[in-house]
Length: 413
Ligand SMILES: Cc1cc2nc3c(=O)[nH]c(=O)nc-3n(C[C@H](O)[C@H](O)[C@H](O)COP(=O)(O)OP(=O)(O)OC[C@H]3O[C@@H](n4cnc5c(N)ncnc54)[C@H](O)[C@@H]3O)c2cc1C
Image (cartoon, rainbow, N blue to C red; front, side, top):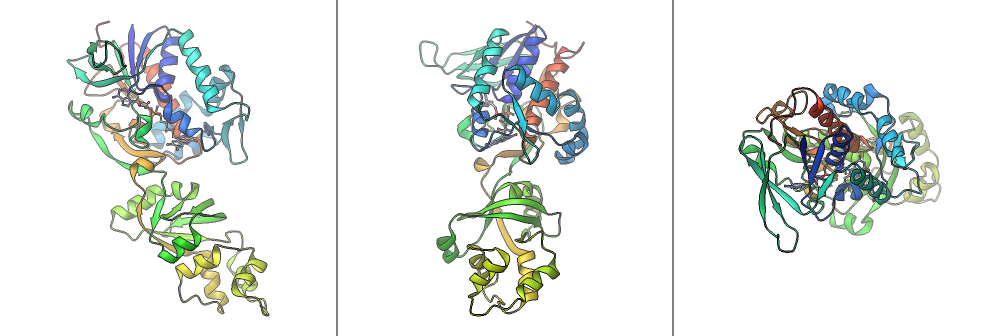
């Protein structure tokens, strides 16, 4: 039975592997010159494959889709992901934050190389520079060969028994995830939730003075919350446009919601999250002698540059002689967010194929035999390995569904 996979990201490649292992004939079509481009990009900033968080908590990271992900993660869990990597010769470890990484000796490209070798051994046919152009009839797929040479631009139709669409989200378009598939699905009546940036930086209208003086600067061991929501700990980076970093990314759903309601979307920054307010006030009450305010902050609270400049940016009439007011500012410095960074810069995409458009097997209701996996579905999750795990789990899920009796046998070959 022929199954066609469109899209050579982690979701499509894992579906291909699982299907080939189950004895399917698999042809994969990828628009770019190579597969796994975003997978390799993910490797640039610390290749975070999954997370060791236990299942109920892990699934809650997928927000509104928590229940669905309970089942998906049980089917292909973080442990399954580690076993899969080990089977390709890539050992992994759990970092102090719970994140799962390949051991240092293994680069992301090593994992991808070993994976592609395995796919070749399993007989998966990978066709790069082949773009899917849309559906034809009840089961056909229209494709264009974009390789240079005599066949350049040739269009053809394949009629698989089952199709997996794993076309990715709509950020980092240069990796191939450009969201250009949306009209192709809408044409056949599939509901697609508009894309929005997820896991991205937040814009703050810094003064020209602040931008020039601070530029980019890290703030370590801070806590951040949106309005009166729950705090997220970690490290952020002050940038020319605003703030970025894991806690900011984790708060993008709340920021997006607050901005959509017309604001206010205010990040509250705690620079001393481990120091209760009375202890903080007591430290600020210590005699200063001849020390300047920045020197005093540094000596008593270990808050060096850029904190004094940041305090004045947040409160130009900084009450340097009022310990209570200073403590309040250090505990919940308001940073009004004016917007989120553009979609193309985001680590991931919210929106995509609506879950109402697929059944429990992630098969399109409008088109039996066509399944959807990975980031192109309407889910979002924070960084920390939850994104790739979600792509792998959905890829494994659709591969299993195609093997089930009665599912995915709509085509002719
Ligand atoms: C900077 C950055 C860092 C990241 N770091 C991490 C991390 O550390 N941990 C983590 O869990 N996640 C991380 N991610 C997210 C992770 O890389 C993505 O969630 C994941 O790659 C999505 O997988 P996917 O298979 O759904 O889609 P993609 O990887 O986007 O693959 C989709 C593929 O479909 C192809 N395609 C699209 N349209 C067509 C068409 N019409 N015809 C043929 N092919 C087509 C594309 O070219 C692409 O290759 C990071 C992302 C970025 C941008």
